[in-house]
Amino acid sequence: MMLNPLRKFDCGVAEKLGCYVYRYVHPESGDTFYIGRGQHDRVFQHLADTEKAMRLGKTLTRKEQAISDVWASGKNVHIVIQQHSLSDNEARAVETALIDLYPLAMNERKGDRDRKYGASDVGELNAALSPEEIKIDFPCIVVYPRARFAEARPTKFSLIDADKLYEVSRSSWVCDPTKENRRNIQFAVSFANGVIREIYEITNWHQVQSENNRRRWEFNGLPSSQYREFIGKRWTPFDVSSQWQCKWLNEKDALGPPVPVFNIEGARLC
Image (cartoon, rainbow, N blue to C red; front, side, top):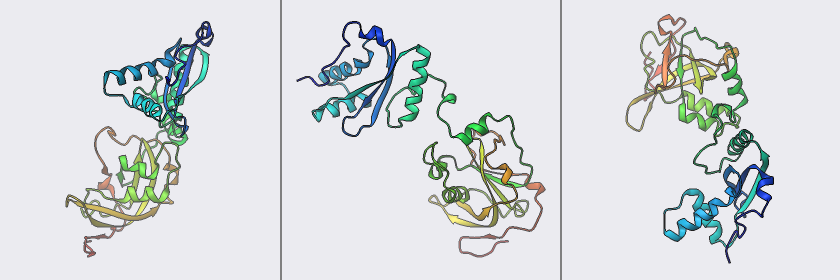
């Protein structure tokens, strides 16, 4: 018996549906593994493509493999028409929104609508669209956790874990806080995705051992109460497309008492 036996709409149905958006859903887990849009019998084309690839012994795409796995279990893929009777532009917008909503969808193309209009954290969106761009003019070290920022916020919809943000911000950096102009710098700015995430008041620095034996540094500190108005604001300090991870800012203007610095063994360096 052929699985997913319905392979085309009855006469006249496609014309009534017009342009539509659809989802392929695993019958047991309920996970949506593919999202698409189309007209006429487009929704069924993936089934025929999978059968053909299997028959010819071709390498299956991730989507085709998912369909094949469902069939191997003796079940039908659950196919959902999410919205129909749409204009082409409406279908594109719905498709993009659904791809954002279902992170397990294995679409090769992430929707046609410009990605800057897709799902965004409200704080990042506010900072990105805000006409105000702040400027930091106090001496500090700017740290950019980059990929490790995901440890503090696993998805763009998650709240930032303050403790994890501190851990990925404080360590471990290829920098040298023992230089004379840097010893008085008391603040570290954690910066990610164009937004200032936190500003820490540095208590001390100490060396840490890295995997490749490079001398790296880690600071201890607490969130600063002095610069709370900067948190969550947009900032373009320098070329964020480059591969920098930390930079000293205004180090020549640093004032105040020196911040203690320790080596790996715990001996105070300055």
